[in-house]
Image (cartoon, rainbow, N blue to C red; front, top):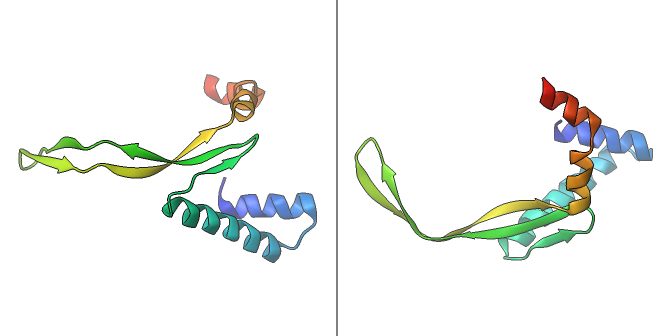
Length: 101
């Protein structure tokens, strides 16, 4: 499913114009990106959390040159779904059917 599909479904379910829905969805993504880049986490009750995870400093290998590379500690964006969200996916019949294929 793409962002355009999400926008179309929201517009169909709410009756709001697609341009307004697009502006709202884009504003949401922009707020999430800006908040997380300034070090803030976002918690949406019943859906999940957008959090910054800290990765420790580590030594990696460049296989082609056979050298060691030091990767400094850094933060990466992460999404942790809420328990309600996880249970809905686990109990979904459609997901179970797709998993069997």
